[in-house]
Image 1 (cartoon, rainbow, N blue to C red):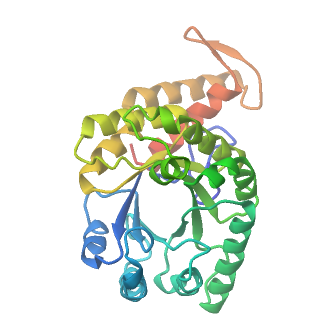
Image 2 (spheres, rainbow, N blue to C red):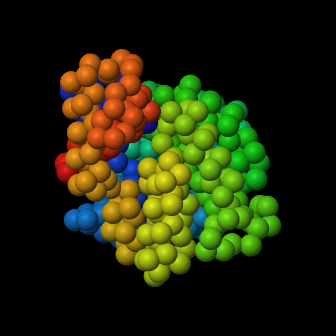
Length: 312
């Protein structure tokens, strides 16, 4: 898990750090009214992304940036959901202005689309540091969500993931199935078999960097049963959350990535047994017909940490 906000899990040591990132919803920066509404929803997403990239036509990007930054800046610093800003690609003519001006909005994080190399992550980190200094912000106060959504990006995913682990502000890797499928000429299906390799590779890359992995968008936002199935499969793969494009998707996705009461109770029971046996630092015990060792302990710690972060 990423290294940003610490959360106690139980009386065990080495508790993971947890920040809920179950739902990551995009809203075009050209619609500040929708952004503002999403940021004040009672049951909103964990993360709200004001999008300057795909959601904004080229001729409107400058005006959209000028309008959305003050809106975000005027929100309370501890507003829920977390406010993110998706900038334009690093090779675009808008990128530098996006990064230089982003600190005005005091975003929790920047979403960086179509990352294709470790060098791009380092460049982004350097540009953000310059911008933070210029705006008198603490260095590394703005986190980064790096999107892997091209053939080149997925091919370099493992190197990108390892590099992410060396840059403290990198919080998550985000898989973009639609753009990836377009770059390889894949035909999209409900089964997702055509993106399964890239989807799994993104999780592996995130694990190498000890950052979170956030799953693809489902563009058919009306089929909530299919969304639930896709989200649960993503959780099985190791994703901690999912990108969404419509408020109707929030509840389904949040539910999929929230541990059930039974899961939380079982995890706490495992950690209690581990503490009683004094094997927090290593060892194996049998408990209720299962072998409990370090990997099982780590999974239980993550479950309890997320439950605590969600006040379950």
